[in-house]
Length: 134
Image (cartoon, rainbow, N blue to C red):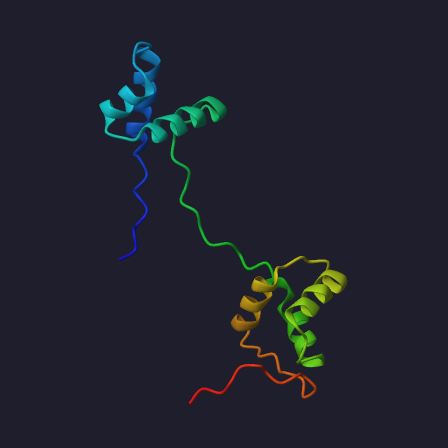
């Protein structure tokens, strides 16, 4: 079973830890952590965030990133139509040169999968070194 991420601390608990820290100079961070049932690391990160940003509130949950290449789908489709045996590195180079967009080979691969585009091997490609499975 995969371990799940712990739930974020409530903003109420965060504010309580900060107030307690401000009003109890005689408590150490480990003692504050024990008082509130959180780790010392949590207290340290919370205090660091509060000092640097002035806020102890939790950040909003992260969302998925918008696909970098989505705006370039048509260009990518044309590149594959023109050169179906292009390698990911070649496509990466063309995207930089023609579209001025930087994308990793993995990002290009995901875009090709999303577009259901299959790259074709050139008939001049060397044979695979792997033995056939029986």
